[in-house]
Every structure is written in C-alpha cells, then in structure tokens.
Amino acid sequence: MSEAQLNQDPDGMPAQTEDFAISQRLHQLVEEAEGPSVTLGWVMSRLHEQAFGLFLLILALPCCIPFLYGIPQVVALPLMFVSAQILIGRQTPWLPERLSAREVKTEGLSSLATRAEPWLHRIEGISRPRLSALTRAPADRLVGLALVLFSASILVPLPSTNTVPGFAVVIVAMGLLQRDGILVILGTILGTAWIGTLLFAGATVISLLKSWIGL
Image (cartoon, rainbow, N blue to C red):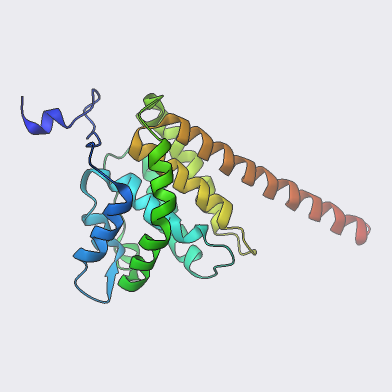
C-alpha cells in the first residue's frame, strides 16, 4: 500500500498525521514568506490538503480580536466565499483573482501566529477524532451553511460584532482539521446563538423605533 493511501481516511480524504500541529503550521507559513507581504492566493497555495480548514482558521483568527476594525471586514468576504464552497461540495478551495490578490503583511501574520499559538495548543490538547461524520460529506455542507452565516455577521459594521462569530469559525475550523465533530457542534452552537442574539436585538431596536415615531 502506498504512503498516500496510508494517509487517507476511509472516505478518501487526506487524514491528519500524528505529528501535525496547526499552531506550528502558521509559523511555517511565516518562514516560507519571501517578502514583507503575501497574498491570500499564496497562503492558500501553501496549505495543500488542509486548505479548507487552515484557510478558514487563518482568516477567522484576526476576527477574534475585540475592537479591531477594518481587518475583519477585509477577511470576511473571502471567508464567506470559501465557506460557500464547502456548502456546494467543492473538494478544494478557490478564490477569484481580486480576492486572491489581497495582501497580508508578513509581520502581521507572524504576530497572529504568536498570539494564537497558546490558544490553538489548548484546543489541540482536548480535540481528537470523534463524531467524524460531521466533518465529511454530506454533513459538512450544513457546516458550510453555518459558516456562511457566521461570516456574514462579521460584515455587520457594529462594535465587537466580529469577535464571537470569529471564535465560532475558529472552533469549527479546528474541528474540521482535527476530524472532531464535537468541536464542530460547539462552534456551530456558539455562532448560531450569536446570530440569534443579533436578530433579537435588531428586532427589538426596530420595535422601539416604531413606537417612538408612532408607527
């Protein structure tokens, strides 16, 4: 049996190797960078079989930083685009030229890897393959739908609206990478609760405005 076959799970998807550390992979990306900035297309080209999960993770991590404006809205559109590809069942992610050409500072990527490392280590420490059917087709399409909604909420131009859905996407992405359905469920619950909170708050504000203006 070939090495490639040994590194596949029963569904033919590339399996995680035991020595694979997601936090280390982020630092490797920084080391591979050849200039002061890299494009999203370049990042995606370096992720290989972990492209979907790792790309979602890299895009979502900046969104977890509270009161950070600008960057979450920049990455939210590529995040939504890649999530939609999970929804429609693509095997590998793709970005159109305009999104692929968006640049990320290498220094910023390095800082992100350093800040995220202890948290990623904690998640790696508690995660393991379980309920893996949730990370594969056809269940992963429902996960893709949830990720699209979470990404859309990041685009909402209100204070701190990026933080909770950013965490939700990170947890789901780690679940996809680790074949951990429990993490996928936890991330989905977190993001869905946040969407529900936004909708409730929006409906309440609209109701108050209508009462104030006598409608």
